[in-house]
Length: 184
Image: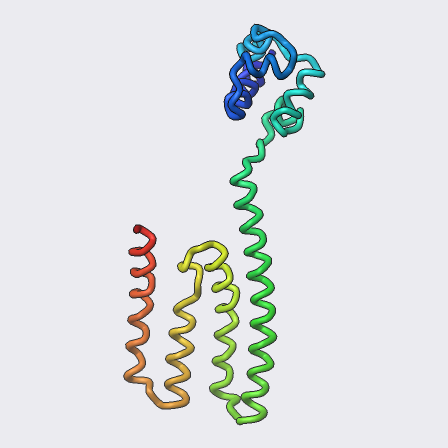
């Protein structure tokens, strides 16, 4: 028998917390048979391969050909990330729709066509906020976009260009604070 299959059989047994004796009892074979499989001196027959795959919750192909074995934690993490990506995409779509409606209301009702375009800076905020929450990582959030939007609005609407440049100093402070709290 192939030594790689033998090593896989041993790894699967240990991964699932069985001793050779326990596995032998579970399959209805001798402990010596299990030992020979794991040393590569003998091969499990088809019935035993099927029983092993069923016992370990994998396919026979995964036992024989070392296809990646599903890791419950990694699988859950992948599913969580996929849900986060879907939620982020939905948030982006809603943000685009909201910004367009708000822009036309601001321009049509109040004549704020020129500074109104700044509202489109809000589009990346919704998906990045969603991603930051799902990933539990504040670095994902587009904080600099908020700073730029506030700076431009204060400049256009209140002519506060000079004093508001100080807002840009909050960007490194934000990321330094995140890294500080992550370490704790």
